[in-house]
Each structure stands twice: as structure tokens, then as C-alpha cells.
Amino acid sequence: MEKALKLHADLAVAHTLKELLSELWEQDDEGDAFGCIIEWIEDAEWSQIPEMKAFAKTLRKHWQEILNFYDAEITSGPLERIEQQN
Image (cartoon, rainbow, N blue to C red):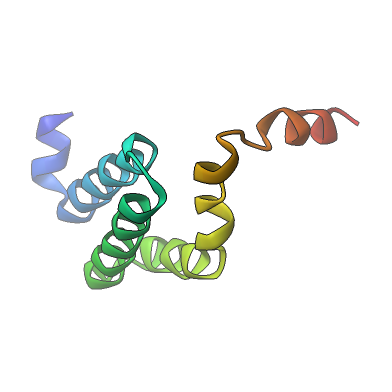
């Protein structure tokens, strides 16, 4: 994988952004998570990778819903799984 990342700069940037976004769920509180999201959005927009910029736009629209996890510490994953089965 390291060889592929060295050969393709956009792939390396996308991989780094993926790793950074996964840190969102490791934050201690909503404030830290908010900072993580904002920083990720800025990094994704700076990357000039169209797919990352599009996802950053989606995060800008839905950041509050994502941060609601820190209030309830539950996700809608099980419900979404049920909806997909029907």
C-alpha cells in the first residue's frame, strides 16, 4: 500500500483524510469533535480532490446531526439496517 500511496498523491491525501476523519469518534466531547470536523472539512476543501470536497460539503450540512452522538452516545445504525432490509 505504501508504494501505491507514493505513486499517487491524491490517493495518499485521501487516505490521510480517511484516517483523520476516523479520529472524530475518539474525541472526548462535542467541542473536541466539532473542532475535528471543522479541521477535516478545511483539509478536504484544501485538497482539491473533488470527492473529498463533495463530502466536506455534506459534512458542513450535517455536522450538528453527527455531533448529536455526543449527547445520546447512540447511533441510528441499527434503525438504518432495519430500513435497508425492508
